[in-house]
Image (cartoon, rainbow, N blue to C red; front, side):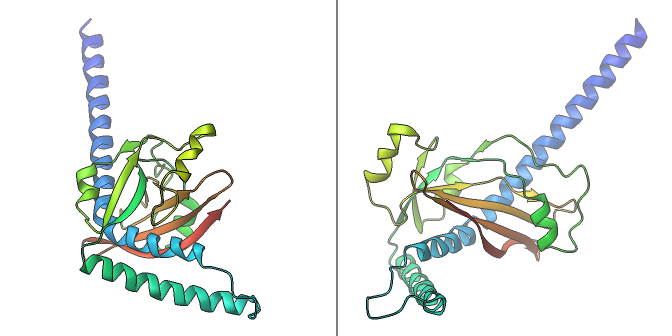
Length: 222
Protein backbone atom coordinates (compact mmCIF):
# COMPACT_ATOMS: atom_id res chain seq x y z
CA UNK A 1 0.00 0.00 0.00
CA UNK A 2 2.84 2.37 0.89
CA UNK A 3 4.55 1.63 -2.44
CA UNK A 4 1.37 2.53 -4.32
CA UNK A 5 1.08 5.76 -2.33
CA UNK A 6 4.65 6.84 -3.17
CA UNK A 7 4.15 5.83 -6.82
CA UNK A 8 1.07 8.06 -7.01
CA UNK A 9 2.98 10.92 -5.42
CA UNK A 10 5.76 10.50 -7.98
CA UNK A 11 3.33 10.46 -10.91
CA UNK A 12 1.54 13.51 -9.50
CA UNK A 13 4.85 15.37 -9.16
CA UNK A 14 5.85 14.57 -12.73
CA UNK A 15 2.46 15.74 -14.03
CA UNK A 16 2.63 19.01 -12.11
CA UNK A 17 6.19 19.64 -13.33
CA UNK A 18 5.12 18.98 -16.92
CA UNK A 19 2.19 21.39 -16.56
CA UNK A 20 4.46 24.04 -15.03
CA UNK A 21 6.92 23.66 -17.93
CA UNK A 22 4.15 24.04 -20.51
CA UNK A 23 2.76 27.10 -18.73
CA UNK A 24 6.21 28.71 -18.60
CA UNK A 25 6.83 27.91 -22.29
CA UNK A 26 3.50 29.44 -23.28
CA UNK A 27 4.18 32.60 -21.27
CA UNK A 28 7.61 32.89 -22.92
CA UNK A 29 5.98 32.60 -26.35
CA UNK A 30 3.28 35.14 -25.57
CA UNK A 31 5.82 37.66 -24.31
CA UNK A 32 7.85 37.22 -27.50
CA UNK A 33 4.71 37.73 -29.60
CA UNK A 34 3.70 40.94 -27.81
CA UNK A 35 7.25 42.27 -27.99
CA UNK A 36 7.68 41.73 -31.72
CA UNK A 37 4.09 42.60 -32.65
CA UNK A 38 4.51 46.36 -33.43
CA UNK A 39 7.35 45.80 -35.93
CA UNK A 40 5.65 42.68 -37.27
CA UNK A 41 2.29 44.32 -37.98
CA UNK A 42 3.94 47.41 -39.49
CA UNK A 43 5.87 45.25 -41.95
CA UNK A 44 2.96 42.96 -42.79
CA UNK A 45 0.67 45.95 -43.38
CA UNK A 46 3.14 47.42 -45.86
CA UNK A 47 3.77 44.08 -47.60
CA UNK A 48 0.07 43.26 -47.83
CA UNK A 49 -0.89 46.58 -49.38
CA UNK A 50 1.54 45.88 -52.23
CA UNK A 51 -0.95 43.23 -53.39
CA UNK A 52 -3.34 46.03 -54.28
CA UNK A 53 -1.00 47.84 -56.67
CA UNK A 54 -3.11 48.70 -59.77
CA UNK A 55 -2.22 47.45 -63.26
CA UNK A 56 -0.32 49.79 -65.57
CA UNK A 57 -2.17 52.23 -67.84
CA UNK A 58 -2.89 50.98 -71.41
CA UNK A 59 0.06 52.79 -72.96
CA UNK A 60 2.57 51.01 -70.68
CA UNK A 61 3.49 47.36 -71.19
CA UNK A 62 2.99 45.16 -68.13
CA UNK A 63 6.39 43.50 -67.70
CA UNK A 64 8.10 41.86 -64.67
CA UNK A 65 10.47 44.82 -64.55
CA UNK A 66 7.56 47.26 -64.46
CA UNK A 67 5.87 45.31 -61.65
CA UNK A 68 9.07 45.33 -59.58
CA UNK A 69 9.37 49.07 -60.09
CA UNK A 70 5.72 49.63 -59.13
CA UNK A 71 6.05 47.49 -56.02
CA UNK A 72 9.06 49.50 -54.88
CA UNK A 73 7.15 52.73 -55.46
CA UNK A 74 4.11 51.45 -53.55
CA UNK A 75 6.19 50.15 -50.67
CA UNK A 76 7.90 53.52 -50.34
CA UNK A 77 4.55 55.32 -50.43
CA UNK A 78 2.98 52.96 -47.89
CA UNK A 79 5.87 53.44 -45.50
CA UNK A 80 5.46 57.20 -45.83
CA UNK A 81 1.70 56.92 -45.27
CA UNK A 82 2.21 54.75 -42.19
CA UNK A 83 4.72 57.21 -40.73
CA UNK A 84 2.27 60.07 -41.39
CA UNK A 85 -0.61 58.15 -39.80
CA UNK A 86 1.46 57.56 -36.68
CA UNK A 87 2.54 61.19 -36.54
CA UNK A 88 -1.07 62.38 -36.71
CA UNK A 89 -2.28 59.57 -34.46
CA UNK A 90 -4.62 58.41 -37.24
CA UNK A 91 -5.49 54.80 -36.52
CA UNK A 92 -5.63 52.19 -39.27
CA UNK A 93 -8.54 49.76 -39.02
CA UNK A 94 -7.72 46.05 -39.16
CA UNK A 95 -9.81 42.96 -38.58
CA UNK A 96 -7.96 40.45 -36.41
CA UNK A 97 -8.58 36.83 -35.47
CA UNK A 98 -8.53 36.92 -31.67
CA UNK A 99 -6.32 33.86 -31.21
CA UNK A 100 -2.98 32.44 -32.34
CA UNK A 101 -3.32 29.19 -34.26
CA UNK A 102 -0.75 26.36 -34.55
CA UNK A 103 1.25 26.11 -37.79
CA UNK A 104 4.31 23.90 -38.21
CA UNK A 105 7.38 25.74 -39.57
CA UNK A 106 10.21 23.62 -38.18
CA UNK A 107 11.85 22.96 -41.55
CA UNK A 108 11.70 26.62 -42.59
CA UNK A 109 13.19 27.74 -39.26
CA UNK A 110 16.19 25.45 -39.72
CA UNK A 111 16.69 26.49 -43.34
CA UNK A 112 16.61 30.21 -42.58
CA UNK A 113 18.72 30.21 -39.41
CA UNK A 114 21.56 27.84 -40.28
CA UNK A 115 22.96 27.83 -36.73
CA UNK A 116 19.59 27.17 -35.10
CA UNK A 117 19.65 24.14 -32.80
CA UNK A 118 16.53 21.98 -33.00
CA UNK A 119 15.89 18.70 -31.22
CA UNK A 120 13.19 16.08 -31.59
CA UNK A 121 11.50 17.64 -28.55
CA UNK A 122 11.03 20.97 -30.34
CA UNK A 123 7.49 20.17 -31.41
CA UNK A 124 5.01 23.01 -31.84
CA UNK A 125 2.19 22.99 -29.32
CA UNK A 126 -1.07 22.21 -31.14
CA UNK A 127 -3.23 24.36 -28.87
CA UNK A 128 -4.62 27.76 -29.82
CA UNK A 129 -4.42 30.60 -27.33
CA UNK A 130 -6.38 33.82 -27.04
CA UNK A 131 -4.55 37.11 -27.41
CA UNK A 132 -4.43 39.56 -24.55
CA UNK A 133 -6.23 42.40 -26.32
CA UNK A 134 -4.81 45.05 -24.02
CA UNK A 135 -1.31 44.01 -25.07
CA UNK A 136 -2.10 44.34 -28.80
CA UNK A 137 -4.23 47.46 -28.39
CA UNK A 138 -1.35 49.15 -26.56
CA UNK A 139 0.19 49.72 -30.00
CA UNK A 140 -2.14 52.54 -30.97
CA UNK A 141 -1.11 52.92 -34.64
CA UNK A 142 -3.76 50.31 -35.47
CA UNK A 143 -7.36 49.93 -34.34
CA UNK A 144 -8.22 46.23 -34.19
CA UNK A 145 -11.67 44.74 -34.62
CA UNK A 146 -11.53 41.20 -33.19
CA UNK A 147 -13.44 38.24 -34.59
CA UNK A 148 -13.62 34.75 -33.03
CA UNK A 149 -13.51 32.85 -36.34
CA UNK A 150 -13.13 33.01 -40.11
CA UNK A 151 -16.44 33.69 -41.92
CA UNK A 152 -17.68 30.70 -43.90
CA UNK A 153 -20.52 30.14 -46.35
CA UNK A 154 -23.14 32.90 -46.23
CA UNK A 155 -21.13 34.62 -43.50
CA UNK A 156 -18.66 35.77 -46.17
CA UNK A 157 -20.92 38.77 -46.78
CA UNK A 158 -18.87 40.11 -43.85
CA UNK A 159 -16.11 41.04 -46.29
CA UNK A 160 -18.41 43.38 -48.24
CA UNK A 161 -19.95 45.18 -45.28
CA UNK A 162 -17.13 47.58 -44.52
CA UNK A 163 -13.98 48.91 -46.06
CA UNK A 164 -10.79 48.51 -44.08
CA UNK A 165 -7.21 49.48 -44.87
CA UNK A 166 -6.84 45.83 -45.82
CA UNK A 167 -9.85 43.88 -47.01
CA UNK A 168 -9.60 40.72 -44.95
CA UNK A 169 -8.86 39.16 -41.60
CA UNK A 170 -5.37 39.00 -40.15
CA UNK A 171 -4.45 35.59 -38.73
CA UNK A 172 -1.27 35.10 -36.71
CA UNK A 173 0.17 31.67 -35.97
CA UNK A 174 1.93 30.49 -32.86
CA UNK A 175 5.70 30.91 -32.79
CA UNK A 176 8.02 27.98 -33.50
CA UNK A 177 11.30 28.34 -31.56
CA UNK A 178 14.65 26.60 -31.69
CA UNK A 179 15.92 24.70 -28.65
CA UNK A 180 17.96 27.63 -27.35
CA UNK A 181 15.12 30.14 -27.81
CA UNK A 182 17.34 32.38 -29.94
CA UNK A 183 15.26 32.16 -33.09
CA UNK A 184 11.62 31.84 -34.02
CA UNK A 185 9.25 31.73 -36.97
CA UNK A 186 5.54 32.40 -37.33
CA UNK A 187 3.10 33.17 -40.13
CA UNK A 188 0.69 36.01 -40.81
CA UNK A 189 -2.21 35.13 -43.07
CA UNK A 190 -4.86 37.39 -44.57
CA UNK A 191 -8.21 35.80 -45.42
CA UNK A 192 -10.14 38.05 -47.80
CA UNK A 193 -13.02 35.87 -48.97
CA UNK A 194 -13.74 32.89 -51.21
CA UNK A 195 -10.58 31.83 -53.09
CA UNK A 196 -8.85 34.91 -51.71
CA UNK A 197 -6.04 34.70 -49.23
CA UNK A 198 -2.31 35.12 -48.88
CA UNK A 199 0.27 34.83 -46.19
CA UNK A 200 3.76 35.64 -45.02
CA UNK A 201 6.38 33.79 -43.05
CA UNK A 202 8.06 35.97 -40.42
CA UNK A 203 11.47 35.09 -39.00
CA UNK A 204 12.39 36.63 -35.66
CA UNK A 205 15.55 36.53 -33.58
CA UNK A 206 16.83 37.79 -30.27
CA UNK A 207 19.21 40.74 -30.45
CA UNK A 208 20.53 42.26 -27.22
CA UNK A 209 17.81 40.47 -25.27
CA UNK A 210 15.06 41.86 -27.50
CA UNK A 211 12.99 40.08 -30.16
CA UNK A 212 13.23 41.69 -33.61
CA UNK A 213 11.94 40.83 -37.09
CA UNK A 214 14.74 39.35 -39.19
CA UNK A 215 12.89 38.75 -42.45
CA UNK A 216 9.40 38.54 -43.94
CA UNK A 217 8.82 36.40 -47.02
CA UNK A 218 5.83 35.45 -49.17
CA UNK A 219 4.53 32.06 -48.04
CA UNK A 220 1.32 31.32 -49.96
CA UNK A 221 -1.44 32.82 -52.10
CA UNK A 222 -4.92 31.59 -53.03
